[in-house]
Amino acid sequence: GQSLEQPSEVTAVEGAIVQINCTYQTSGFYGLSWYQQHDGGAPTFLSYNALDGLEETGRFSSFLSRSDSYGYLLLQELQMKDSASYFCAVQKAAGNKLTFGGGTRVLVKP
Amino acid sequence: DADVTQTPRNRITKTGKRIMLECSQTKGHDRMYWYRQDPGLGLRLIYYSFDVKDINKGEISDGYSVSRQAQAKFSLSLESAIPNQTALYFCATMPGGSSETQYFGPGTRLLVL
Image (tube, rainbow over all chains, first blue to last red; front, side, top):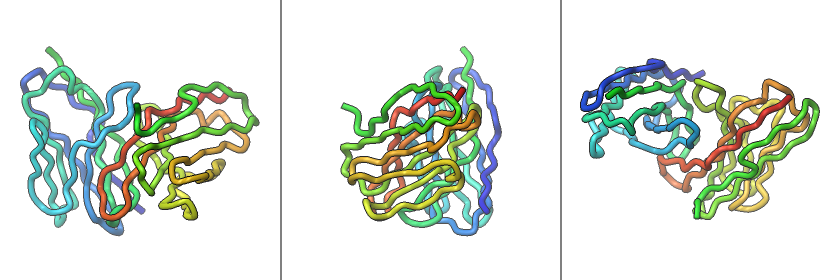
């Protein structure tokens, strides 16, 4: 089977940095994705890692360590609009289906 | 116009009723997916399709069926709805090949009484 673990909730203030960790156990691994979902909205793609290392996309960065079955999403210069749930998802093969973690709810306070 | 649309957006039904949720996309993607999301939880895959002639069960397919009527359309049916199927349902699409990005519809909120 597969399992992904991520913290359920994180609270931080505007301008701060938040790191959301994701550990996974899977019988096959191709890549790790991150999605953002605002309350009442649809998940939207943020970032993807297939190789070890850091991928940077503006204020958001994602890291992967395949040997540790671990990744994280780094949110920098937090803004109120970043209050949302963030999901990691494992892709087992190229172009294949995703298995999602339970999500981390990020609350940004003034 | 939205690239992935779902109808209806909200639905209330009674236990035992058959209900169909529809998904349409204008992105030209081959791959389509149905997920359910329960409050405070992640998304769980119900069914997925890699092309019109390909249908695959996901992790929670019991009580559900699907139909891929065309490349652009993928419908999810609850043959006999039960209260624990109350959830938020999302359709998603993905290009073929080695893509890593899924594109989600706005969701259908279903309440089974």
